[in-house]
Length: 385
Image (cartoon, rainbow, N blue to C red; front, side, top):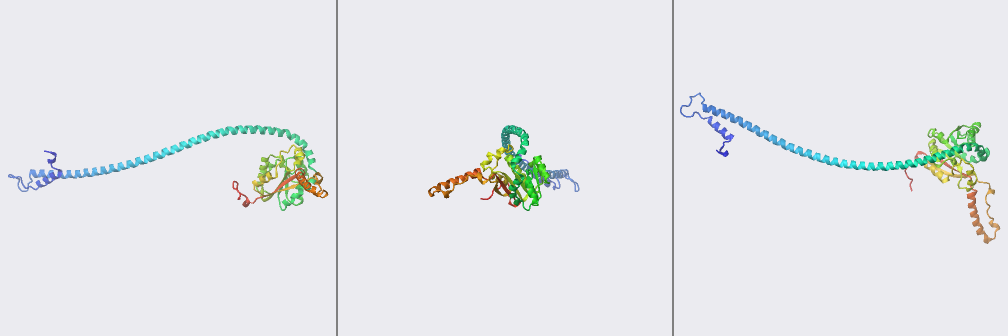
C-alpha cells in the first residue's frame, strides 16, 4: 500500500462511526441487549480517534503559537541588532571625538608647559631686577632720611605752600571727610580745618607727622597704599594728594588711584598735583635735585589713569608760574620800522614757545569727580562714536 492509499485520521473516524451503528455481524450475532465484540471495538476505536483528533488540534495550535513566537523573536532580535549597531556607531563617533579632544588637550598642555618655562625664565629675570632695585632703594633710604630736612627747606615756607594750595579749597566745599595723602607738615590740612571741613592726613615720614600733630591735626604715619587698603569702601568724600606721585612708579600710581576710587563716595573729589614735565626747566633743578623722585608723569597720562578708574571731568589746571623776570622778553615791534615788524612778530611767537617750554607753570593738577554708578561704563564696553 502506498502512502496515498493510507487512510487519514478523518477517514478512520468516519469508518469507526459507521461500524458503531451496525446491529449485527451476520449469523450468530448476539441477542438484544448485548453488545457485540466488534461493536465494542468500534466504539473504543472511535473514542481513540476522537482523542487523537484533539491531540492533533492541540499540536497544530501549539505549532502555530511556536511559529508566532519564532517570528516575534526574529523581529525582536533584528531590532536589538539594529539598536546595537546604532549604539556602536555612535560610540565609535564619540570615542573618535574624545580622542581628538585628548590629542588637542595634550598639544595645549605642551604649549602651556613651554610658555610656563619661558614665563618662569622671565619672572626669574624680573625677580633679579627687583632684587637689584630693592638693594638700590635700601641703599638710598639712609641717604634720603639724612636729606629730608634739606628737602623741607627747599620746599619753602609753610605760608608760601599754603598760599599756593589755597586755590584747591573750592573743590572741597561742602565736603565732610577729606584725606590728604602725603600731607607733610599739614599745610593743606590747616586750610581745610579753617574752612570747617573734616580732614585727616597720611605721611610716611615720622618727623613730618610729628610736626603736623603738634598743630593739633589728625595724621596717620605709614605707607599711603597700605593705609588706603584698610579703609572701608565709599568712606570719604574728598582726597588731596600733592607732590607725591613723582616719587612712585607708574603702576603704583595706577594702583593708588584705583584704591582712591574705591574709598571715595560717588561725586567725591580727587585732586592730584605733581611737577609739570611740560616745563623743561624742572629737569634742570627741582626734579633731579631730589633723589627720591622716580619719574615725571604727563598730564594726559594722569588724566587717563583717573578716567580709567571711573573719575569724571578730569580737569587739568596749571600753577606755579615763575616770576616774570625769568621769562625772555619780547621785542618791541612798535619801536621798529614798519618793514621789520613782520620779522619781529615771528621772533616773538618763537620766544613765546620758548618761554612756555622753559618758564611755564611749575606744576599741574588733575581735578576729578568720582562718577556715580549710572555714569560709569562697565569694563570692556566702548563709548559710542
